[in-house]
Length: 193
Image (cartoon, rainbow, N blue to C red; front, side):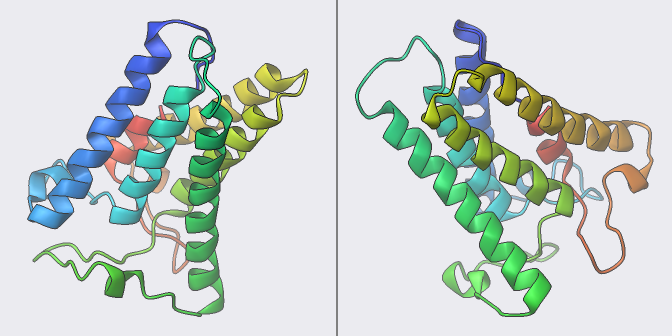
C-alpha cells in the first residue's frame, strides 16, 4: 500500500484512496448500495473503514518527499493518530464489550447493511500498521524508509490475500473466523494492495 519513491505514482494512489473512501462515505449517507458493496452478495465496506481510508489517503498524500511545507508532519501525525484512535476504540468495543455506540453518532442503516458492524480483524491490523507507519514517518529516523517498506509489505500481503480470496472464491481468505471477526469487503482488500 505504501510506496515512498518520489514521483507521481504515490500521489495518484493517495488520491484514488481518497476518492474511493469518499464515494463509500457518500454511499452510506445517500444509501447507494453499489458504493457500499460493489457486488450485491459481497461484503460491504464499513463506514468506519471508509473513514480510516480517508485519513490514510491524506496521510499518504503528504508522505511524498517532494511535498515540503511546515505543517506536513502535523497533518500526517494527526491522520495517523485518528486512525489509531478509531482502531483502538473498535478493539476495546469488540473485545471488552464496552460500547462506544458509533451507530448512534451516524444513525444510518440500509436495508441490507448495518452501519455498525465490526470491521474484519485483518482490516483492523492493516489500519493499525497504517497509523503506525505515519508515526514512524514523522519521527524521521535514519532507517525510516526500510521500516516503512516492511510495514507496507505486510499491508500489501493482507490486501492481496483478501483479493485472491474473492477472485478464487475462497472465503476463508477474507471471511470471518467465528465470533472474532467480520469479513473484508472487496474494495477494502483492493485498497490495501
